[in-house]
Length: 139
Image 1 (cartoon, helix red, strand yellow):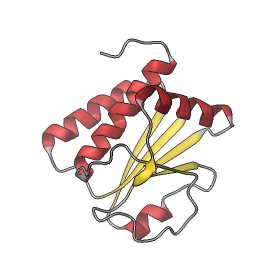
Image 2 (spheres, rainbow, N blue to C red):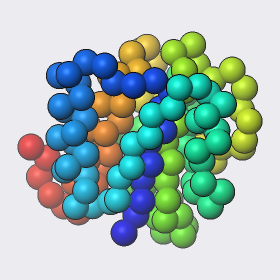
Image 3 (cartoon, one colour):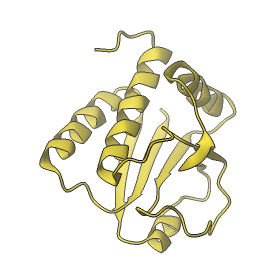
């Protein structure tokens, strides 16, 4: 089973967003093993990345995909032998420097979102991607 880790600088403080994050986490669990890691600093974020993972940084200037393309991106990563995808959500002002080479930079939108919102948007898109790949209807 594919392992997906989301590492984020900062915590989700909004109870409403936290509940939705939990809901999407449950939905994803039938398709992938999901871990969500909160860290306090960007330095701690880089220290949490396993050496054998395919690392994807969320960046405003990264590659943009529609939902079908994002699903295909995940499928291609799996087919290339990547069993662990790590998504990085940096500090509010963005990453100050890359302390490690990342494999891909993805932008979920040209718009700016709060850290609390972006985690939720990422999880929703991951759930949608797994639904597409598995031929399940998206509720």
